[in-house]
Length: 133
Image 1 (spheres, rainbow, N blue to C red):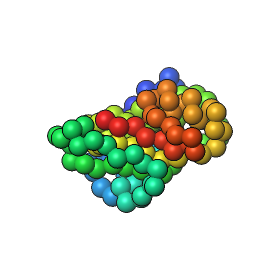
Image 2 (image 1 turned 30 degrees about the vertical axis):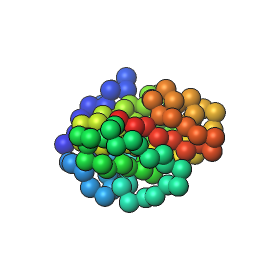
Image 3 (image 1 turned 120 degrees about the vertical axis):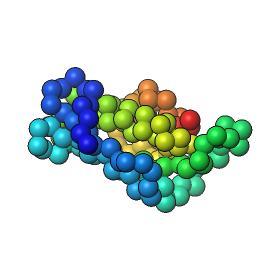
């Protein structure tokens, strides 16, 4: 159930969903303490999400997920945990043949833009994010 989170910190583990559902939760623990999480939803609409050409998704189930939130506790920020967690989310979605992940970059716009772009996301002028597989 727990998997080591590759973030450079000892004893940090993540739990992942078991397959696709309308809501997906990823939880991060340091020892027995919850220190972060990510939530995705397949039920949220986003007017800015760009449609994908059908040829890009011919063998995929056609499911896109909205990254509702990704959060790391204040004392654990800037240690690579959020990046490692987002990598887990992306890898999970690829493994499950999800078409795309989309959402909004909320917070420090310049820093978040660089962070999401570094993970392969495209951003528009109003900080909507999308990563297509």
